[in-house]
Length: 102
Image (tube, rainbow, N blue to C red; front, side, top):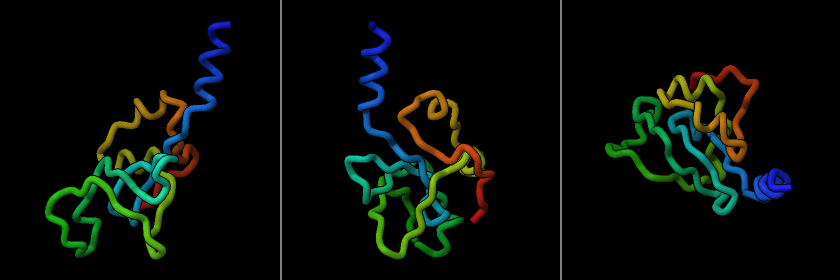
């Protein structure tokens, strides 16, 4: 009975999507704020003249922005460990893609 209660709580908990934002940021989107990408790792080298010197905490998603689910390869490319995210069922990422070097 205890396991069923835990399963039910896990099913009701909102999912967090792990994403790549405009090719220069590895981040996540919470269901509570679907228009915001919160930064896990920002790459000024991939930002192509965005001009940010310090790492931003978040980006607001606009109409011209490109956002896609991150893959395990993206985590490697951004030098971020994916292990904790893989073990938590509340995180959603692209488990089949090889990643795209943008």
